Length: 155
Image (cartoon, rainbow, N blue to C red; front, side, top):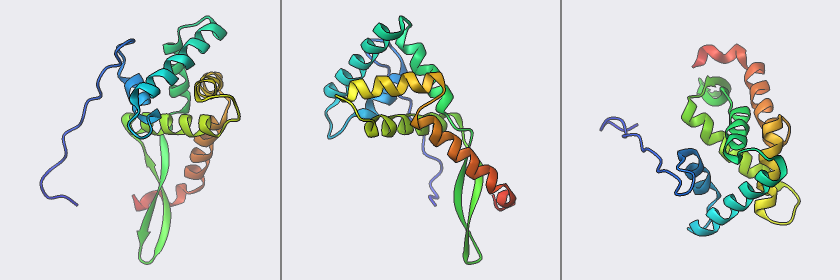
């Protein structure tokens, strides 16, 4: 543990087209091997597909999907006197959003489909409706936390 104090929080930059921090977080998570322009392309193609399919603002669909996928409690491994317990821990909003974005992207990468933009848009639409692999992951996490509620005093 560091003795120099707490690290200062980094504030995410804004997205150039929509002017949204959440989009910039998503773009940085989509990006692989430093190819940010490709990540922008993937996200904006996915947004265009969402716009055509639902006739709604794709930014509101993204917000709703992330809101539905964001967990409020998770389990953390704690070692107490030689044995490891899965201890339920509450999650802050920033960490919850980061987890939601990660789960959405892993679920969309696993999907069968043509390209990443198609898979991402499908996963976002499913998550906004309350179904999909990312929602299942959130429910699984909450079930784990509920099952291990007896170890909450190890926090």
